Length: 238
Image 1 (cartoon, rainbow, N blue to C red):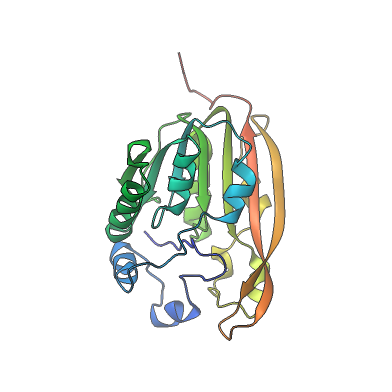
Image 2: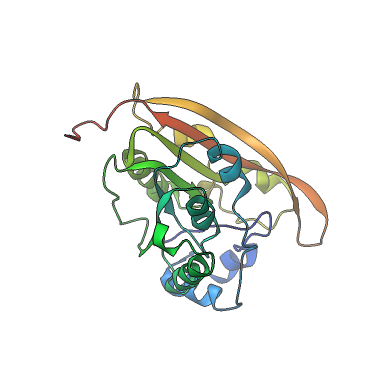
């Protein structure tokens, strides 16, 4: 698997130097295990802000999170009553996430699964919420991933995909310099089956971050939130 995922709020785990030192880029399980082993905690421990903004008003049900990192989003969802399946490529991160869930007393509401998002196929129509934050892949892998995530959403359920917007490349943020790995909300919306979805949010959302020199700047997230209105084609839920 070649992917990047970012659970920080402007303090990205992926650095431009990772691409200079690792070319062509291969961000596999070994890479992520080594990166997570660099420190006891990589992320803030807080849920991603777009998840909080977009999901707080939803009725809890079953949720799938792809690329759960150290578990902050999964734990936030579990605290709000969701039954969560959280997947992660890094065994180090997954163990850390499970420990955090135990400490937060929500371990019984989260199933952690070691999985490669470029290969694992979630069950069709099985989740009331499917969410992926800052899961960046080359488009040849990203588009099929988004199709699989969309297929996993139950009728009436929600798909939430958030990523670094391509416009971030025009800032001083320490971003990956691979435009094909970035996407817009419209790119995600384009994979949804026509007539089967209502797109509720499709936007470039600004937030404040800090660049490598400690200066404040504005970056943008691509945010796609959609509700499935029809079952997956060929799916029998009887």
